[in-house]
Image (cartoon, rainbow, N blue to C red; front, side, top):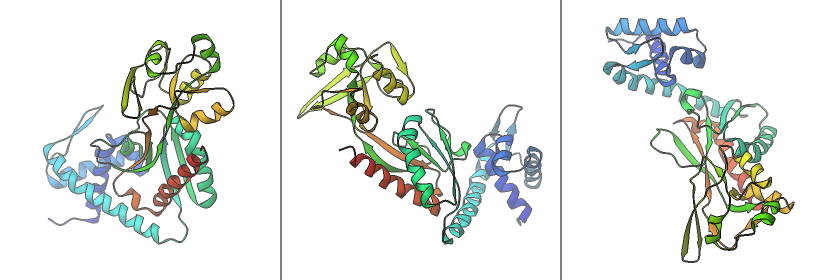
Length: 302
């Protein structure tokens, strides 16, 4: 069966609809009207004489034939995108848009300063940064890059480790005046904690060959890392905080470092991106820049 140029376009549109989860989202992503997207789907089904999608007013789902056909359409769309990326890589000066999502505190403490420097080096690269502590769907959101604090699960995405961030236990001097300063892990259970909802309530420490596990609890909790630090600074309890966030406040006398002779688990920061995206010159430049920038920032903490 011959494939026309028009059918190739319809196949790419179909791939976007499946990945975005709706006709409206796909239309927005590829810059077409919803009516045109619907036209391409109907024409494709008519040409193939098979139903590709089950559609209702609120959702879509792939038929068996649609699932098989999508795999081929996805490859075509990816190859077209990669062809554009290879042309972009030939340009002397990188340009174009990078859409990035990042947790709020990491964004404010590390990403924004890094991107300020990056833009000074590459002014033709446009940036769209979304700060959110919710885990965004990278494909549906059209993101080129997501910053995350955990390794990938089975998501079909790619990842590159950017940095390892040391952590520490802190409390405000005002809290320690009222509750006393813990000097060993067993004393931590008697203290209030500011609970960070994105992390486990179990705190693991080690010293030499000895390991300790502490169950943390408290009356203040938050899903935002910056808010956690602010609550600790206000005297509501202890918390495990990344060193880059805590150290300026420790030096200013706003926080006190606790049990510093014990080891805590580090936080690994990953750059996560769709397959093939790292082939673009602009994203490769950003990934390399971020690794260098964060390493430099951490070394300055020493």
